[in-house]
Length: 187
Image (cartoon, rainbow, N blue to C red; front, side, top):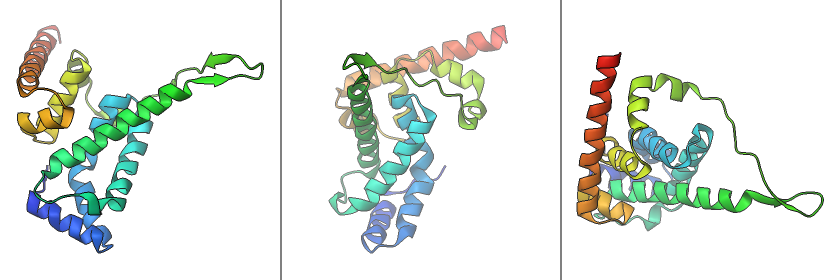
């Protein structure tokens, strides 16, 4: 996996500001899959995660001037993605209650989508192992492993104490190791 340095990311932002789509393409090539995985971890719907990922990169194009060089591009991307996913869930929760024809508030049926190829190809054993983690642990593992963020960067991005991030990460790794070990014995 290719990860941009801060200088390379800054150059991509400069290209975007000059309306050169290659800058956005380079950022997407390096971080598109990871942003999608982060979105999926929050919204739980592959289709919504795909839409949100596209929306996030469009937003990056539109708001590139707001990026401040030297502030850590990985943190910038992950905070933007996380905030968009959370806003999406808040909006969806707000929209769950509608008024039917009789003027009565009702809750709409939850989406029952079929899994996509991305989910199926993802690997059953790893997915089962990840299912043993709670949401915070999944997000921390994704940010640490997928985005190669430091515990400090994760702490700042998620707004939780550094010690909590490190503890949850170690706890998640222990769960994953245990699940993989049990899977190899049972499998």
